[in-house]
Length: 125
Image (cartoon, rainbow, N blue to C red; front, top):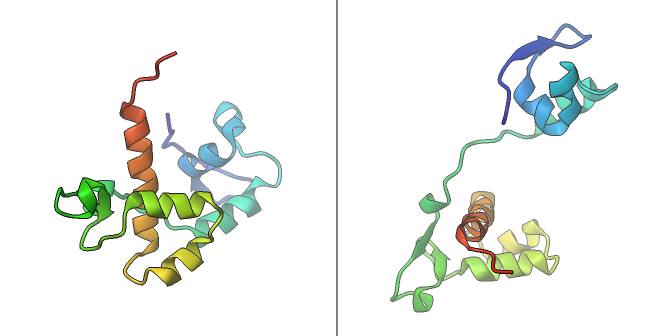
């Protein structure tokens, strides 16, 4: 569970606990980041802008396209292909260069789709 309370670091800058607690789990417990966390947290916040994403906006299953496998909307590129290439170690930049219609958001959507599919499966032991 994410916390949304704000607190001041030694620098006096207000930060949301959402970022701190995700990166430094002990921050939630003690109400402050680990030593040296302010600089690392600031660097991460300045480089990454996280936007909500729904895989349904990017992925579709149509029986007439690629035998009904999940594909990215408006393409014949399967989610399976993208995840397989990433799993084999292909850098994201190379994958995007090879498929100009894909964006980094498509790759995030593929990972969210895989997580959703795995989350709905029953594990039989």
